Length: 164
Figure 1 (cartoon, one colour):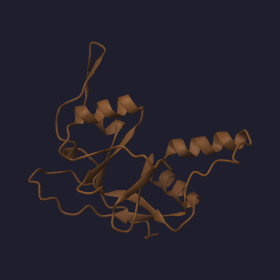
Figure 2 (tube, rainbow, N blue to C red; figure 1 turned 90 degrees about the vertical axis):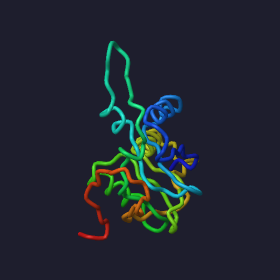
Figure 3 (cartoon, rainbow, N blue to C red; figure 1 turned 90 degrees about the horizontal axis):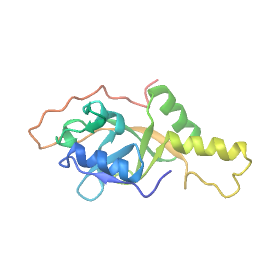
Figure 4 (tube, rainbow, N blue to C red; figure 1 turned 180 degrees about the vertical axis):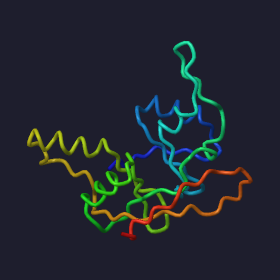
C-alpha cells in the first residue's frame, strides 16, 4: 500500500492531473474534497480516453476532473485479508483500490503494482523486510455523497462487495 498518496480536487483540471501523473510516474489520483475526504478516483486511462494525440503530442483538455472521475468506487477498510482485495480487483477488473477509514478519509491506495512487487520479492525470496500493508483489509462500497455542483456526471452502476 502506498501511504503517501497524491490527491487532486474535483475542480482541478484534467491537464493538471495528467501532468501530476507524469511527474510522479503514477497512474491513479484520488480525488478529495475538504479535509482529505475521498469523493472519486481518476486514472491515466480516464484521461487518455479524453485526450487527442496530434503530431506526437498528447493534448489533454482543460476540463474539471469532477466531470470525468469515477465517483462510486470500491474502497478497502481495515479488517479482512489482502487476498480478498486481490480477488475483488480481479473480479472487477480494477487496478487500484483506495484505502479509507470509516469516515471516508484517505489512508492510502493499493494498486496492481503492489501485487507485482509482492510477486517479484517472493520469487527472489526477499519478503523478510516487506510489509505491503500495515493491517488487513476488507472491501466495501463507497457511496459518493451528493455533490452540490450543478455539473452532471455519468454514474456507473454501484458495486456492492457484500452482495454475492
